[in-house]
Length: 180
Image (tube, rainbow, N blue to C red):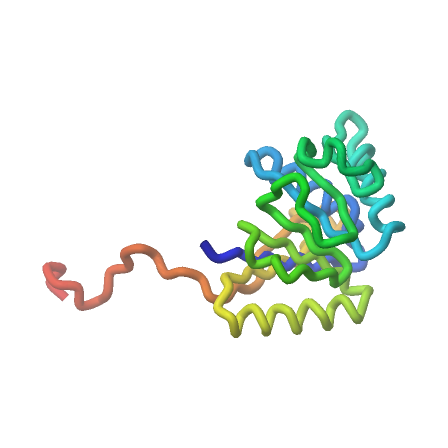
């Protein structure tokens, strides 16, 4: 199985990285998937840790981090790290702030999250898209957009894709037996 790469482009007026990670992690957990979040720095890791505890008033996401030590890492449905490890056996990998792992293609799905306010992260995401496209990986590019014309409410819209598998059976115009 080839990893699917989803590029998430955060905009200036959008939810911050921490909220986006929390919402995507929640969706992954609802689908019975484990998540590994790669942060570029210990400071970002702490901000993500805090966000997973407080992103909604009446909920939190069960998680652990490298700061908690290795004893219960395997039990965590979401794990936050700055080093290339996968102690919780995650199927989904979230790469933030231009982080990269050589084993990323071994995950079921990889989320590349980048903020347009960070020119370096934007350039790295563009370069990664080109490299992965040339290698034949399935790619999806998502942008935050206003919902129902309300700039205060944001959702995601797929804006581009590459290297997608064709449908198992796509009839042609001249398929035998169709009269064409």
